[in-house]
Length: 272
Length: 299
Image 1: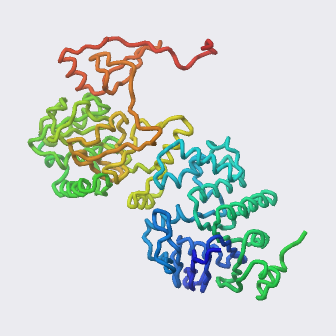
Image 2: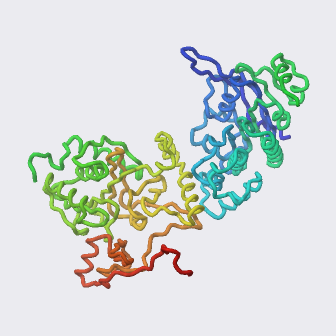
């Protein structure tokens, strides 16, 4: 594994107004993510997982702490400034963040409807990022869309259908294809398999594992499903009430949980 | 001129405010400048934006021409022309070459415009991204960042679903290689005329309270794909009255048997040609029904 840090989080926190007082949604989170590494963030509902993901993806600004990312220049080569190429996301302009979000990052939403453009066809959804980056050749856009539909195991005959006519699992695949088309290095996923039935979930996880491996993707996956974490993630963070209570290698955390909350979480998984 | 009104209907301060907004619009080609649109004695949709622009730039030495769908004698054109004749007393004309200000809806005249002329467009919806992105704040950000991929998504979708870019009017243009701009509902046939036009082009949207401008000799590019380039409409027929074969034609159905009369939409252009001795077939053409009724015969 490359020992150049891709994403570095230091003491990140975010608070929201609740009623008349401020409440920390997530607090004091620090970790480093390396290229090709998959990190799972687990915890119960309301533990601050999604807020953390939004902080990482610069969709929310940190109230304290900072998120640093190894930003490449527009040509796609790493900015050759040695070890300190990490850039604080809060210092990037909005234009640069948008560029980053559509080239180097992907964001897979829990509800595919939030991540897709529902009023244009599947092919246009896959092509959108490329067009935003200036692709102006219809034939090439189309062949790339077909290529990605194949890679995520979607029926290529449905390229011109609206995503609303796709099944839930297909929408999620389309969303993944749409994000991966620009070959990002880092993908954020917010409960990507929640709401899908078990067999569809299994196939989607299989696909994700394959893609992560093939494309050498780094990923941050928010999930409350420990099985997803076990299958995909190298490392995991366990969150409770906005704080990270435990972090470590996935197998270590799941097989030998140290914190009482993690122990509770692991022991409450149903085994058929 | 009716002495009960200020020159040009609007009061001087309002005209100054609109002119100030227009200076900004000219300085930033294609950028939509907000302005304090006034209630006009017209309904919205009748060209209140264009009328306000014209009212604030018109002077006593100007000659005004007003067209609607290319014609000088349609309701909208006649009424706006009468409005300005009454409130300013400036001479009006139907001849494109004599006019110094041309207010238009839906067309750019066929005759080439000159540096001495200003063309004012009536715009119903100034925001080209309006059907694609409903949030006004988001479209402003997209304009600020030059983030126009979404428009191409729409064009892609047209080609994927319909085989060609289906937009035939209000076809989006990029002004000065920077701002995505709505050319107002002119046919895409007229888009190439906006490119490097010597005349000043002003756009007013009264209901939406926006002004924008394309200064003389500005690059205006219609969006397209490399393998589906921008094309204008072509007709197989020439104008039945004047015989012109390169103007924008109106198709009029003249009976219930499929006869169609093709005539120039620009009435001044057509009559100029006729008085210069050009003559068309003077006949409607019969186009076989494309819709086969009651089963029909096999091709």
